[in-house]
Amino acid sequence: MGLLNRIKTLPVGYSKVNYNNKTYGVTRTDFNEGKSFKIYAEELGGLDFISLNYYITTSSEKLKPCEMPDEKVIHFLNNFEILK
Image: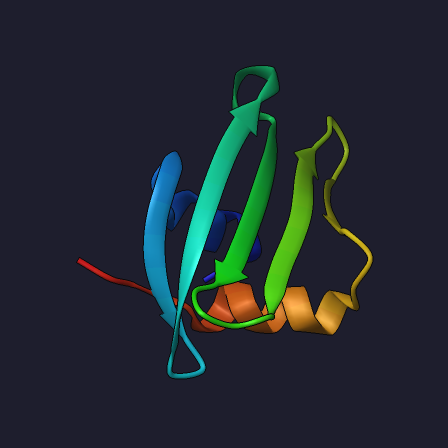
């Protein structure tokens, strides 16, 4: 599943996910009529966080992590599980 599809599995607004056997609070915000997304995830009771923007342009899609390696963000997106 591609990164955009993984982003879209997160509900808009606040939710909780499991990642690396830890619980994270995640906020997804959509902008520009669904052409850009902001994701911010914070480990509950811990210090880790994930922050990214994702843009859909006429010619491509762009992942823009906020002050962290692409690999960390991609690993999070590919491995979180939404908690019900």
